[in-house]
Image (tube, rainbow, N blue to C red; front, side):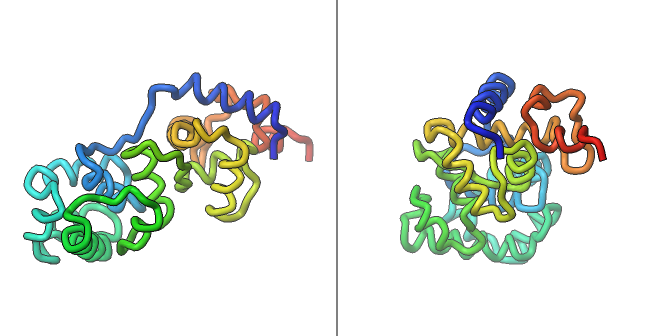
Length: 214
């Protein structure tokens, strides 16, 4: 893991690169953000936005979504990965929201994680974007980039989140989540990272290892 001086330098560079970025998911309410984030697992944000563009126009609230049968919802979201299990979880979540929360999404991690298909990452995404809650949601991009650079040195998502929370100032947690996602999409890609177009190579542990003699 990088030392404090290098971590600060990396964070400063990331903030300069991605200071105006936010989620690529399109939504108007916390409910729509929750559903979009549930759909985004193993699917691209671009694909999810295509699906929700039509879905939310007719079924943009929990009570309206419950007008759909399971088969109807499956048909509407069938182009996203794992659509059958997602459809089941979405309808179960909508039922809980309507019956116990008046159709409104509770902005509490523990409550969010009680909904079917909602794990810690999804809960953190909703909280960090839809409220003032400081959180770092560790998806595949954040996990890969943080551990490659050296902002974390962990083998699990939870440990990575904990290390990032320790190494990043709390008021930067939510923003840093987006910085790392966008850096993973644009530069630090899974299979072919564009290291020659990365301003972090001077600090990056992954890059340093590639340059080290065998």
